[in-house]
Image (tube, rainbow, N blue to C red; front, top):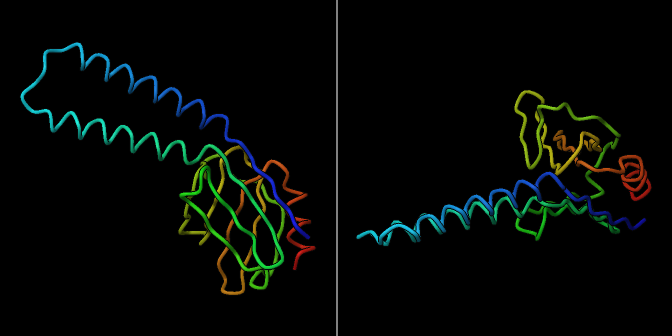
Length: 152
């Protein structure tokens, strides 16, 4: 069974836009000041701002695809990706993440679990043969769970 769904993280889009506006304002204020002797630090500050924006923008969405062999997940424009072999999956079930699990890519040591999420609290938890547990956030958990179970 093939499956493909993209969930948009609207809060992350708003946060990225707010940070962009903030950084733009800082740059405009810096250009209004008389030029400083050290222009290298201005370049470094601008480079760090661009890096922060690229990282934030990379978490604006989470795409989940299932083909004949793999579950593939991709954040945003693809810097952060992960794939799971369907043959390695022991179980899949719909779960609710706790509010403090957060969004993005998170590792939880005491529960030995990795979470991939862009919005909301719904997820599908998969357990692999090697004992590792992963949660894939989604706004359609039952469909994703069924797609995984029917693809095995």
